[in-house]
Image (tube, rainbow, N blue to C red; front, side, top):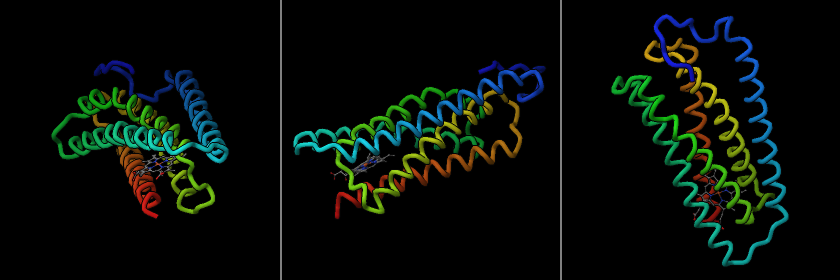
Length: 191
Ligand code: HEM
């Protein structure tokens, strides 16, 4: 994350081109890893059978991972809201939210690993929708990471409107995905 300097060229200038190519490569690799892990977990879920005791432990782990992952997502978005309301500077928001990406990714990984042990009914439409939402959440998370880095490069300067609009769209996709997965998970346990 480059430190802010008032005379620094605008992020994304010609001098950044090799860095941009490297960054794009890393983002593509991260997106491919997400898709691979997602497909592998769905395949494994269809082949695993757990006894009731392991099921209970996995359900507790599922809820603990939900608290860590979604809790961190809510904290990030709440800080984004404070910035929109003028209560925090962009620099403060970027600084506060940077370390929260660890519990977000850790929670999502935990939800996936424990979810596999919960024997999801992969032939049910709602469960399929939930798994698609999980993939969308993860890919959107990779994209949000790139947006975070680009926003951080602006320091105290106001980022351009299109970049802010992409940040807002990514936050909305994330909220819709997480709430959708929570609702489907809860509904599935009731039916
Ligand atoms: C963003 C990711 C996820 C969220 C927010 C989420 C959320 C939830 C919630 C709230 C429940 C209800 C728990 C209860 O009422 O006690 C649940 C249950 C469940 N989840 Fe997830 N989940 C996620 C990912 C996954 C994944 C990736 C899988 C499978 C690979 C999965 C499989 C299941 C199953 C099978 C249940 C039912 C458990 C049972 O009643 O036996 N979940 N989930």
